[in-house]
Amino acid sequence: MRLGVNIDHVATVRNARGSAYPDPVRAALLAEAAGADGITAHLREDRRHIRDEDIEGLMAGLKTPLNFEMAATEEMQAIALRHKPHAVCIVPEKRQEKTTEGGLDVAGDDNRLARFVAPLAEVGCRVSMFIDADAKQVEASKRIGAAVVELHTGAYCDFHYEERFEARDAELARLTEMAAYAHSLGLEVHAGHGLTYETVTPIAALPEVMELNIGHFLMGESLFVGMEAAIKEMRRLMDAARA
Ligand code: PXP
Image 1 (cartoon, rainbow, N blue to C red):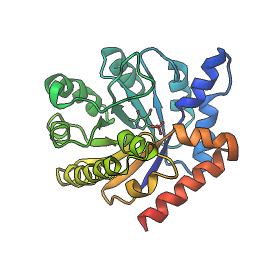
Image 2: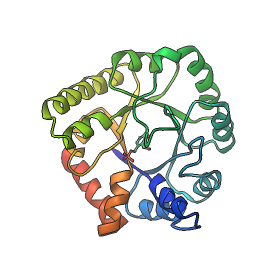
Image 3: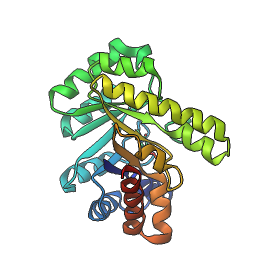
Image 4: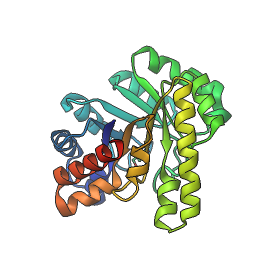
């Protein structure tokens, strides 16, 4: 199972002061050195964290694959077609949200998304749909030609920290079922959003999940223990869950 490290929040800190530092590309290189199997970055329409020049720096400097998160807009498609990152993860985007709050409605927009995904797949990007654990969305992702689904673990993690354990366990059951279902349809399964040391184990234990994408918690933890130690501990927990 691969660990993708999301470095958006390094850019958030940089942008808060309008300074040139801390540099998200430097963070990505450190994350790679600490054992990340790939780097995830979300170029938002409003450029609130990652900027176009960061994507250029990542494409030029990374040794591991870049997972480029983006909304399904023409502007983003043109950028992805120019850079041809290893993977493109399509996410829903709202200006007002603090983070990506829910999964993409693939089922409700399947004709447009099928046309959107085709040219990305043609240039060799592995296209992933960031969806809630919902059979309709899994089926639609398969139908439109995505290679991968990334299951949104945000609700599961929120319920855990709100101590709503019944709701958390029900969400985990949905994630478990949908990971197996997506895999049975031939989709590669990833998961992410909100994962921490406390919440990662049951998700990493799902046998169909091939990749976790984790950012906010890891960048926060890096302030206390350093990025290398934070990433190594996450990796250790993932491997222990798998074993
Ligand atoms: N996966 C996707 C598709 C995301 O949008 C994000 C957040 O940018 C993550 C994973 C990582 O979430 P977090 O930063 O909460 O770990």
